[in-house]
Length: 258
Image (cartoon, rainbow, N blue to C red; front, side):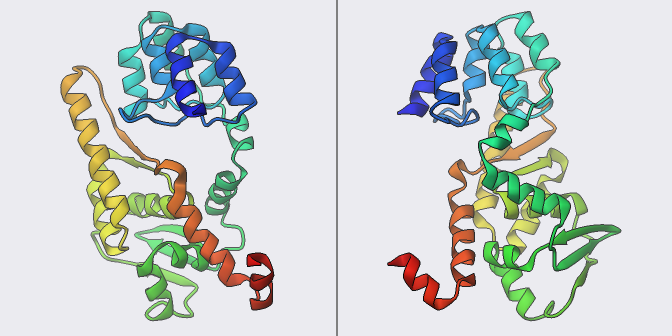
C-alpha cells in the first residue's frame, strides 16, 4: 500500500506525503511499478521540480547513460528539471543509512575485508569470499570443492572471460545488483551461464529488450550502462540466510528455530 501511495503522490506532486513515506515509513525510493517506472520518472514527467530535487537529494537513481537516467531526461516536462538531472550527483549517505544490509555487502566486495581467495583475470585482481560465492552459485560451490580446493589465488586465463564482466558478476553475487556497460552484456550472459545463474540471464535479456525498445523509439537517447536490480533481493537474502544457518552450531539452530 505504501509503495502505490508513493507513486500516486509523485504523480500529484505531493511532496509532504512523499517525505512522510520516505522518512517515516522508510519506503524505498527506487521501487518500480509494472511499467518499470520509478517515482522519480513520474515526478519528472509531471513537472514537479521541488519533488524532483527532493528525490535526487535522497538517493533516487538517475545516472547518465543508464535506462532510468535517459528515460527521466527524455520525459522531463521542463528545462529546469532537465538541468537538475544533468547536474545530478547521487547522494548515497541517506540511502545507505536505510539499508545497512546492502551497504555492508557492497563494502565487503569493494574493500575485500576477510577475503580468503583472489581471482586473477587477464591482469586484474578480484578479492572474494568463498562462502558467499558458494552460497550464491552452484558452479563456484562445486569448483571450490574440486579444481580450486585449497587455492588462495585462482587465475582465469580463458580468452573469453572479460574482467569487466567478471567484476559485474561478483557485484551481482554479493549485492543482487549489477551495473554493466552495454558492450559487455554478452560477455556477462556467457559467464552467467557458466555460473548457472539462469535468473540473471533472464533479467539481462529482459533489460536489453527494454533498452532497445526505448532507444529505438526515442531518437537522440543513448544508454551505455545496464543496471539489474532484482526486486526485493529475495534470492540474495534467502541464499545468505542459508549460509548463516549453516554457520551456526547445531544446538543454536534448535534454539533459534524453536
